[in-house]
Length: 164
Length: 332
Image (tube, rainbow over all chains, first blue to last red; front, side, top):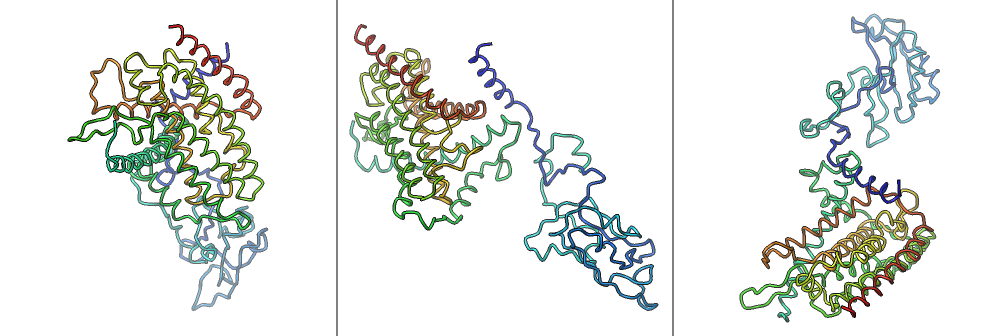
């Protein structure tokens, strides 16, 4: 086909696109569901009776290639029983600005005390805020989602709508 | 028709503000249309349909630090964007948007400045505007800016020739350089786009290249090069360059409307002088959308293709068009 006709076909294509619904996903309102094995923000876990699973063995800190985990252990006493084992983590900090989310800490942990969750919205205005303490890691992750009109910013993809 | 100086002053004030408003919402329209043509939304967060986006952009640009390179030469660096923006705004002053009205007992012209050499004035101002780009790139004392301004300069100078030649046919047919006379002539006969179709196409391509828009956006070439002549500019100084570019585009669309599409005039519609600006605006928006559509559809030219197209295609075609028109005008 001669070249000018092809060019005009290109113009027709872009014009047709005007009447299609955009495929944009309206991000803060609708999020793409994460793959189950996605490695995001860490989480420390407790046993069902409320005791911490972490026994302060520092194996996670030893396994960490980025050297971002700091564990200071202390002895459990009958008055102050924190974990199920002999010792517990008095200080447990993860520097999220150094973490490379490799998941080796999760593999190294003998008690499944630390896992990597699906949270990825962990940016901060301050580097100091990137250091996560034990209390933060033990609690449910805070979901920082802007209050927005989900009807106004609709997602065209039904799967995202039902899964986010 | 003459009018008191204070009417011109008021009109200039109103028109310059309307022009800036048009510029702001051209950027909105461009982002919106480009977005929809690429199956995106475009701006949709600031206000309804993102209508407050241009205002947000303006506040952001004004509040941003205007970076000043230590090596830059002071005066030219500051004056260059002002020159570009000023000439772009000034060029619009001669474009007629209405036939003129009698308000109370004064006559109000349909354009800010009614001069006999309007068309030459537009091209002259456009050529001065090129200085803003060249001087801006040179005064930044940066090799990227200098190369960018050379690229811009080469492109604008080569396409100016065919742009000026392409309107020669219209001038010959309209028998005048004043844009109001040209529009009146089209009203009396027919829109010049029909007899001057070749001239119109040359003017369209030349104009797109002259306002450095895709597919001729080599001066900026945002996806492959550093920004070009305004590499070292930021904040509102950069904003002035950007404004100059968009207002050049609006002036170009205005010229297309005025020279080839009958200005404020619409055929088969009973002439109502008060609606002149309305029809002008409709046609202007049509051309602005056309240029945006062009940007969404066509890939950027290579530099040698650009030069070859300008000198070996547009220039001969424009020259032949002018010659043939001259012969026909004399014969008929």
